[in-house]
Image 1 (cartoon, one colour):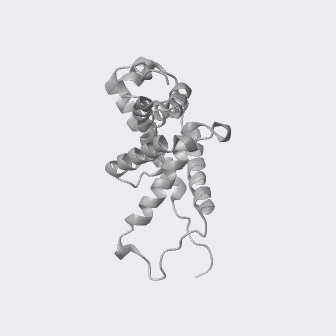
Image 2: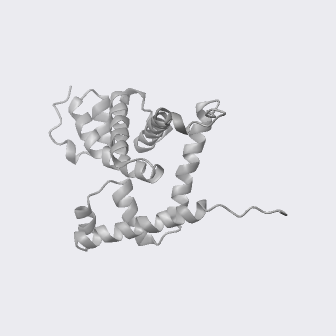
Image 3: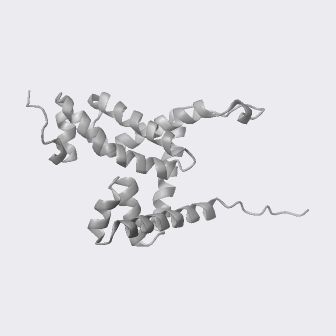
Length: 197
């Protein structure tokens, strides 16, 4: 077996995943630290209604599940980040089912999809909507949201890459997220009902 990872932070994603598959437990630690921020950024985009604390717990659980079940990962069926996003969507669905307060349950009960594929399709559609909305933003807004919320980079790292100071970077990100939320809100604005009175 290879020696423990003392250079894990310099390995690329594929090398790190392969090291974990090969039984190097230290790779799991580096994998969590590398992918947890990305998972959190993704969770912020698909679950804006969930508190930051709950999002962090969901992401932590999803990444730990990915590490524990790494032998189930099949690179021929997709990338590790896509597989992790699927695990996170499953965690989010399970959390939503458990988190509905009794007072919020409608009289007719909760309609549960007849199979998991229906829920997967809904989640993938939500992901498509987010991608579509991102595509409507200016390139500079798309870039900063992707770097911060999907790649999980720190404001300092993004500021260095963009050649601006950190305060300006934070402000740009805040404005970009506000524009994305405005687009989402305008998309969800209910249409007036037609027909005669």
